[in-house]
Picture 1 (cartoon, helix red, strand yellow):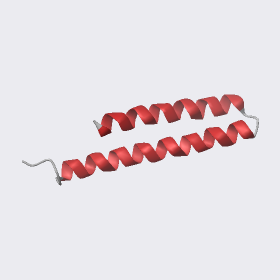
Picture 2 (tube, one colour; picture 1 turned 45 degrees about the vertical axis):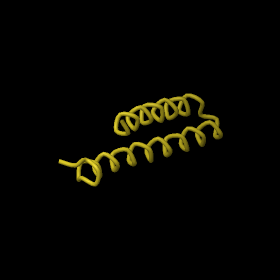
Picture 3 (cartoon, one colour; picture 1 turned 180 degrees about the vertical axis):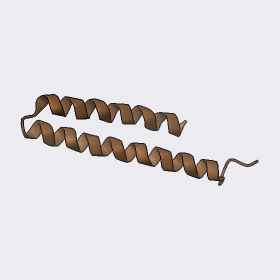
Picture 4 (tube, helix red, strand yellow; picture 1 turned 45 degrees about the horizontal axis):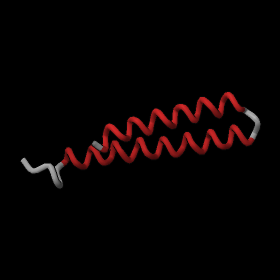
Length: 61
């Protein structure tokens, strides 16, 4: 079975894309919370963004 062009490859790319989009979303939320003076909330969003980055790495491999 050829991996290139397979449904599995497509599903992995969708998973990677979803995790990447989630990371970006949480980065934006962290930035907004920090700007608005919510340092603890910002830190939580930033940590969540890092978790999403690690998830994306798993799918990218």
